[in-house]
Length: 311
Image 1 (spheres, rainbow, N blue to C red):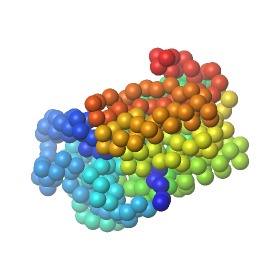
Image 2: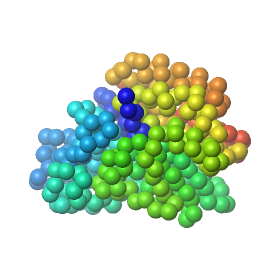
Image 3: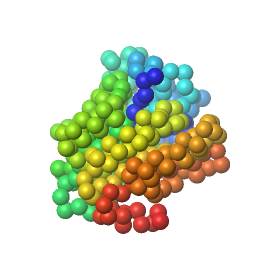
């Protein structure tokens, strides 16, 4: 099975189950009411918005939708969940609906990096920007899972000039969507590579290319796939970090959608302890039916103060 390295479960009603999904939808509705400029062609009954286009991804068809508030998400196959999402600024361009094929669609997005739509995104981007502010010299980051590019773009705009951000995404179709529909803008210091996450890490280890932080948003449905919670994966990350480095990984700790997620989480903590050190946890979503966390591991001591409040 081909694994997809995407930004973690996201959406106007993403893979977040139950009450969280409802809360996100209510927020979308509130923003739409405040905007006062709903597009008549968008269906009010479709909480995920109107279909913009579809394209073929490695795991099946990818469908892009946009809401009246210009929030955009992409879903895979027949899934009711959403792989990733971004908030775009301004109204939805009419050109978004001129082609059903994403390869020929024209749906530009001026991504709102100050309004990342999900707690996990914000937590990892905020930590990276805190690191940037604490460093007298430009830093380097590796992001495993480009998704819509919101995390990378937020870091690029929030960190000083010279900051390097390298993203890795397995699915070339997702990279195309990120660029054409979700507002990701590649540059000399904000790059994306189409590759498997572990292979990309091992290549960098071999080339002695080191990073100040590695951010991981790797999911297959609601679960973190085994390759992204394996000993080999975490050891490669440790080798890719500078002597003073930080690892941040978005995970689900539990979900009523799939009880085995809790077992995955406990196993991942054990692998962390063996590969890179006991992880610290930041809870970003805690509801009766789901719990989302960011796991952190520190190499060296410089960044421990950044996580002091986590104990």
